[in-house]
Length: 473
Ligand SMILES: *Cc1c(COP(=O)(O)O)cnc(C)c1O
Image 1 (cartoon, protein in one colour):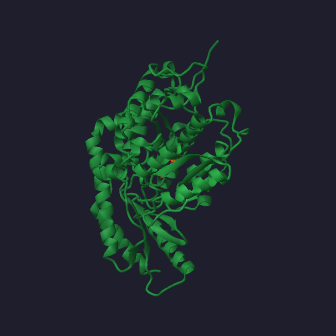
Image 2 (cartoon, rainbow, N blue to C red):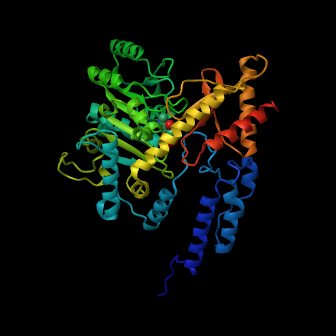
Image 3 (tube, rainbow, N blue to C red):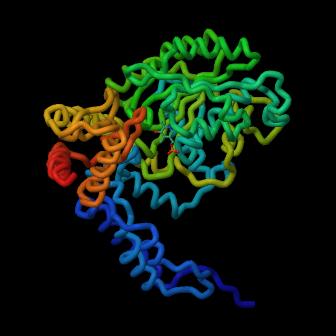
């Protein structure tokens, strides 16, 4: 009987076409508008929702890509994309990912991806070393920071309540309580909800003038919760909050957690990359004392999305949480990744990291991160010397929150409206792309310098643009 397959005729032609799209996209990224500025409804109308029962020829598909896809992508790699903390992917990371997709390995079992398994072991070893964990450390690559927090808190829960994976936590006498600062990322709320603790048992502790968690207030809250019959179990420290980029005092938090027998998790999704610099290392003093750390290679390590990383100081806790066999943990044994996380079949996220880190070398990556920190300082100086603008919060890493200062005094609502208007004008210009941020009641603008392509010249262009745009407000 005759069979068919999904193979494509003229494959080499289409692969060449694909690579020429890749090449044009990467090489032309600085020339395109950063943001395409198209409403969702209009973009929606360019596409077809009908089920594609019959196939379409390859040439039409490529035309679609060129006409309707590429122009409306946000150009994350543009040198003046300074929004959120999604970083410009490094071309070596992209090459690594392209090859990785062809290989389509699924390293949940060694045999489903022998090299992918070894490469993940290597990447975890590298990150453990960067953050100061010993040989007992372990970890797993996940999709990003949100899954990182979820994975780490699931492991923390198991370390505290041994039969949590079997019995759940419905019969606990004392409800578990988690602590973090009041500017922590929503991923903590989500994780606490998903693992059955409930966000009402998440305490958001106020921060000091540098947006670091107030350990005195944390201590008072823990005492109160114990008195109220609850069970404090975990503190989530911050390395680079999503708004101001604040870094908690990790060494003191580690002391506090040790004294109170709490699991100490550090969310370094954004700030982790700074561990490669002297400034970052000093800010993260004590991070190696955390029980677990999450950091995102797809943020300040310039790896294309998705790539998150969870590290655990003692890897037996990872195995004890996610093991698929009744065997007891053996420190001498190397386990399949199905015993190390929530997912089973999954992509190899190690390959692109391995490829990029080896190509550039950490020395080069650290220079780029240092450069980002220099650009941040330069932008701050520009704002300080410009009567139209004011920096809104202390700067620790690469995020700068600032606001436009209108000529006459306005109430907070009007003030906020103006900031959003300016942001929209910047977006519409296509020249740069920033994000809004909330600081208390205030809405401010936020530029984040974690882009490997940004230059000092780009900051001059951005300042000139903003000076021009405020005239229109
Ligand atoms: C981005 C971020 C997260 C979430 O990471 P994703 O990769 O977006 O899921 C968590 N915490 C902080 C501080 C972040 O900046």
